[in-house]
Length: 463
Image (tube, rainbow, N blue to C red; front, side, top):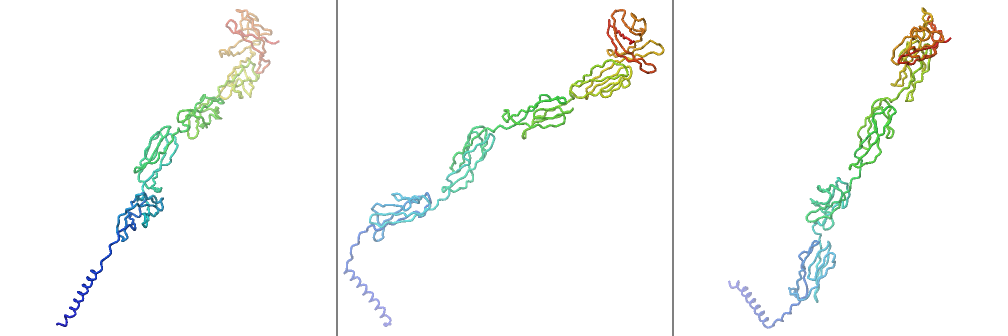
């Protein structure tokens, strides 16, 4: 048992001995007084070493003594930035981040090692900074529309998406969304805004619409024509303001009755036709023309009384200058060949001179003296009275002079007068003598006059 306790006792004695020695040594050597604390270095602290453009940060500077312990800074500090385009620092230590990049901020004090810190300026979060609107200037006509486009940009000049723009306008145009409709001549402005940012005002100039052809009014100097007759067309244009508008018209013709040359319409054939004027897509009112045969006359001189079995040339003329053709209504009395009439027998020969639908009718008075075979020396004369279209039959007989016409004896050198007037009427004639249908002599002339209201006829026989 005693053997086990000896090491423990020896250990305790050793520890007590060492403690006593140390204590006696400390009591024998006193320590030096501590040195005073002085500012030896600076320490910089920032809220963020990576501010974003536009942000600011206040530098916090801590002084340290020779032991590295905090000490109050009792001197003025100086601040500087190595890249003032990126960041600046004020005399009070306020850093202002200006642009993306880096800058070294230095803080110094007399007899103190300067302290530095690097500031890395980061881009700020994109935000709407400006708005543009286009076009900035435009010109439209009254009634037209002008659309506008707005674009937002952030603080870095990059396009910035804007969900909705608000447009405002004033002036002589009305706004519909992002468009302006011109109402009257003048000007208007429009702006676009969003989030408190407003664009510059765009200007819209409103002018009058240039005059264009709106309507055509067509008229004619006359619409009833004869063949060859003419009329003048007049086409008057008007613009959208009701003012006269000059244009070269083109005429559209429907129907063969007329022809058009320039503004002149000429009757071409009997019938009707319609004319309109047009220019571009504008068409006038229609004008209807009616064309009739030309108003003309046929002059047909009254032929002289002729004897049967003679011919006479016909000289009718048309006022139109066109050719005239002849025909007979009495083919048993007379016949026509070209412009010559042949008198076939005693009677009334009725002829027609014709040019188209225009004609003139003339009558021939022609006399036939027929010898009565059963009464030698007595003759019958058939005379057509064109004044009342009746026939008179006169038989010669009676005394040589002073007797009545009827029953007067026809002899050579015969003179006949009316006893009630004493006015002697002379005529000379060649009379047709017929025996078994053969003509012996010809009637040359017949003279008739009114005398006291009665017709007196006389003739003279040749020797």
